[in-house]
Length: 183
Ligand SMILES: O=c1ccn([C@H]2C[C@H](O)[C@@H](COP(=O)(O)OP(=O)(O)OP(=O)(O)O)O2)c(=O)[nH]1
Image 1 (cartoon, rainbow, N blue to C red):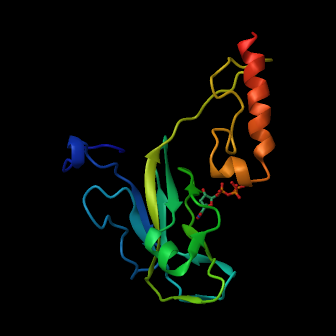
Image 2 (cartoon, rainbow, N blue to C red):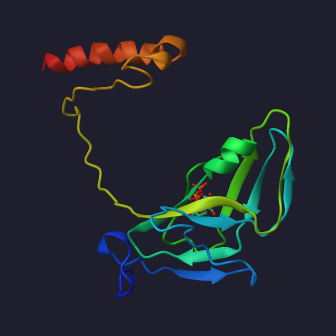
């Protein structure tokens, strides 16, 4: 049921068909605000007020049955983040294909001074549906070499390398690259 015939979207691809249950009869069905948007907006069905530094779990009033091979990811809304300092604690939240419960959104107010208030049906997050792979792991004693090797946490230089406490990872990476080149 994932891709039956339907109106073609951008690039001629038809949308993935997803079963949705409304747990609140008045909640709007999530929809894309504009053509080409990656995420459709999720609303809260409960009003809430968050003091600076406070977090809470908000209900969205919807549950899904995603097709096998897909997952949905609950992403923050940039406008809320920029204007009010609202973030999602676990961003992006992962909605598994087998999950049939209500989608909930774990929001926090990162603003150091202002509280933030959500009214019922305010948009609080966006849901991005994507194909996902499952993998089979094959344990090996050594991994094949690569140019980056174990470099991370600012190993390519710049601000992060100069100012953060993980700078030693960058130095370690240089050593490991030397090891790999010697192989
Ligand atoms: O932001 C989120 C993240 C997850 N979920 C739901 C859907 C997901 O399928 C389920 C489990 O999420 P996750 O695997 O991230 O949580 P966990 O803490 O690892 O719990 P579990 O042991 O149940 O997997 O909770 C949400 O409603 N909102």
